[in-house]
Amino acid sequence: MANSSAIRLDRVELSLGTGAARVHILKSISLAIGQGEAVGLVGPSGSGKSSLLMVLAGLERADSGSVHVAGEELTRLDEDALARFRGRHVGIVFQAFHLIPTMTAIENVAIPLELAGRADAFARAAAELTSVGLGHRQGHYPAQLSGGEQQRVAVARALAPEPRILVADEPTGNLDETTGKQIMDLLFAAQARRGATLVIVTHDPALARRCDRTVRLRSGQIEPDDARVDALAGASA
Ligand SMILES: Nc1ncnc2c1ncn2[C@@H]1O[C@H](COP(=O)(O)OP(=O)(O)O)[C@@H](O)[C@H]1O
Ligand SMILES: [Mg+2]
Image 1 (tube, rainbow, N blue to C red):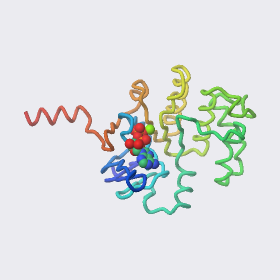
Image 2: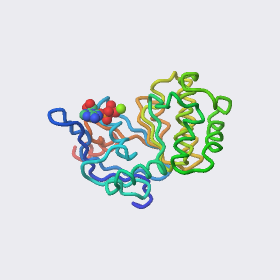
Image 3: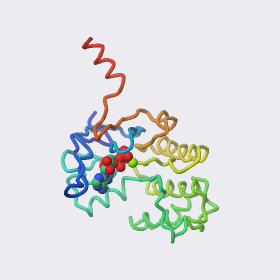
Image 4: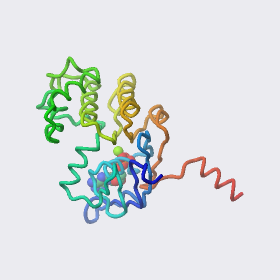
């Protein structure tokens, strides 16, 4: 069973910042997520959701504990290996899109593929833009696109390398409800069609409900789910 986990964290600790500003952010996080599962990461602002996402995407290094993702133990990889891991296995979508403003839509999607050495980078990027409904906007710069269109480019960029793990940090946070729903549909379609594992940070209850399950963080720790708390309360009563 353990080997079928796409993501497995064991007693992960993370602190960031230096000196007096150092903050103990993640506290003994243990979590297993199966291949193809969709998990909603919820919890109050400042509870460590983005930090946890960064750790499992290989963008932040845990201080201790084990981070096993897509068959790799991330704590053992050096920076180069970690960058290769991200390029191969992880697609990331941020709330603020993070497109490169001086590049067209197709360039934004193709560049990571080129960096990964894909000879068909532009053809794949065009196909991916078409699949998110932006085949006709390939030559547009981010500033010439609406927020929803920019996020669709970001989704195309995340999906183009066909990652096994897809992480999204409040991907609909900057979008109106209808546009946000379209982005959600694209992410869940990718999860279903490609068997990707999806981890979404969200404040949106509708988005959380569409996930197979939710994981709730509070002050850097995973909260036991309510059902379990009720069972424990019942057992001790
Ligand atoms: N680079 C950093 N240096 C110091 N503290 C940080 C840094 N990044 C985040 N934090 C702190 O860690 C806590 C968790 O942040 P974050 O993971 O962004 O929470 P969330 O996404 O749940 O709102 C917050 O208290 C935040 O201020
Ligand atoms: Mg956050």
